[in-house]
Length: 286
Length: 261
Image 1 (cartoon, rainbow over the protein chains, first blue to last red):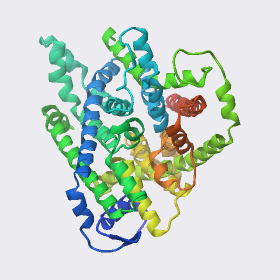
Image 2: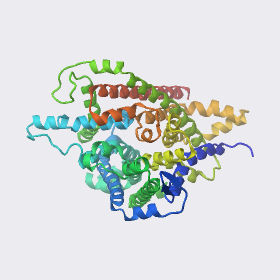
Image 3: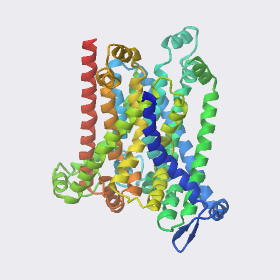
Image 4: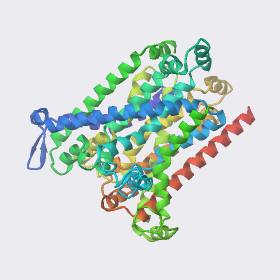
């Protein structure tokens, strides 16, 4: 067998299988193991899955992960659309700069962003000081930091660039003449958006939604460092079961249940978005 | 461009940069408390930073870990892109899905699973484990960057080179490589940047290694401190420098290619 270019896939496949598929397969195996005296014993026990099935906390936390993923997706989509559309109107020379401006916040470390938001939202932070100085409030707003509001805001902040980028790429491919034609035929700008631009950008919206959902639903750092008492996440519980409690079977089962739920929701979301009329038109054409 | 569009962009940029600007402002503020009003300009926090050996070694660790991550992401991304664009590759769809898995599985789930398998087979957690795991997470990004350029590449150029007697290796080095070099440097930077930005993977796999992000995370649980701000600004500035350099390099390549054409 002579060497062909496609054979270069082999080392990549080996790396992904060893680093990604094998660990996930091991999770499946461990979820059926038993723990005795802090030792993991191969077995075929449904103890962990039974514990998981009857635990309301676990399912509540999985539901919370789905909710935070969906909410982040919706928020970033609502904010991302106007930004992406405004970007398409930039002069070609400004677009290169716009990409850098958009992506640079992503390059800052996870911890940098979390740290920065604490300074912005704290009791003596920028927002509270500003509102106090303007006389809009009499005492610092407490809900800004360590609350579900903070988690939503920071997850939206972290993921907005991905959504903007995905919608932008899609919106750039919309033929400007279609919009002009709609306008010439008497469509108001709102109609032109909902009946021409939006349907034609649904593939970008779908790609952005999947990306944002995948990145935000499993996130554990932002909630645990900025969420205060509402910061509990399924992944933090998995971490706890794995490290402190040494209940690897339950940790594995919970992680797998989370992964499977997220996968189902993501597939449903993709299916829903791609069933929209415009997406069919775009994909059918390609 | 309309006034509405422009204001949307200004508000968006304001939102994206607000936390970073506030961070930077307080790193120059002459007070240990991070509160308004500001108290005056100082470089004291940067001086303290420069004398803090812990930070310096954490910084060196992060930097040394980020380099191999960039190189591995670039090499594997290149191989993956070459395979994806290879003629007659029957498993292309399956391969593409496989390439996406490290991106689609949440980093936290992946890292915990990797930590479990490592401790079972007796693979010590530490710098090596961290480098491998971070490279894997960077791989989908690197592959996307490189293959985006490669799909636009005209394969007939390679065929022409081969017809004129070039070996496959020569054709790669002298025809394809010059075209995709900017994408390769982009893939390398993405690997480096993702590695510097990571905390989640480090939490599970760093072992006794202490990269900067872990150090900050443990300090930060206790209190906010201006010297931490100063450090974040330094890291930010270095990352921005990296992004800027690779962009300048990319533009220069493009200009030279345009001039040659």
